[in-house]
Length: 355
Ligand SMILES: *Cc1c(COP(=O)(O)O)cnc(C)c1O
Image (tube, rainbow, N blue to C red; front, side, top):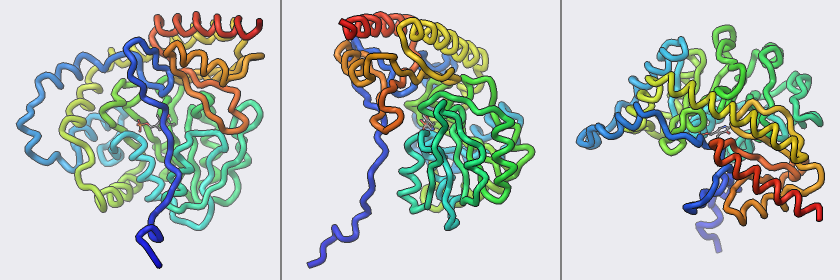
């Protein structure tokens, strides 16, 4: 007998880091910003006209598209908006990856890419990173249906330089190359300038990390108007009003406070550099991170053991059980005080493990 179950779409979903809610916890497991959003954002939220919520928002979110275009020196039709960059990336996969050839992304990268590929039935291949967690450029010279590079990469924190990206793009002028820059604000470079030279490059960024608005869900893509229009056509085929009135208002407000943005990013970077020194002292090794997290392995104590012991202290970091990286911990950068606590507890854990 047939049942509705025969026609179920089954899929293994992406699993985000847990969101525990303990009063004394130190949450270093999802790369959120340890600082609150800009006071400008808080001000706009407090004076927000709630009556306006009766009305549908502007389908184009024009105010936010304009503000982002101005911030990045683009035209408004070069900016696509989404409900977090996960939404932006999913729509980009749907829009650009419709060939029979495999889309390429590394074996170790943001683990949502293969979930979307499965969901949209896009063939894909995952060339292995080298032993230092660098991408191997020649792997991306082969025929393919598109390329996705998180840069800096997650969860490794490693940045490939602009020359590397340019070379990969030069070898892939006939497909769309997506560069996921979720962490670029914490690094020394963004590939945004490449969108001016290449019509097949899409840069994806987010408010979730550097702009401290993960809870608002705002992401965006930048590229040539044809790419953006194609994505909008797909998006408006299933949701006419992705961005709420509130997300547009707060998104614009965040961009108006460049000083606060620069200051908080600088603080995270400073704390990251301090944490690197401490982790080295405790016997951890890691590639130099250009993000708001450090991906580190200890010389003798297994990652899972440290993970569990930290968890008992209500300090949450991230561990991935994928092979090649299962002895690493991904540690988000919190405030200086949080990182001092984290280092203090980790030092004890590592010392006790040696006894
Ligand atoms: C955090 C992250 C995203 C998604 O962020 P949103 O909160 O959906 O904007 C996308 N890509 C990478 C590599 C990330 O780490």
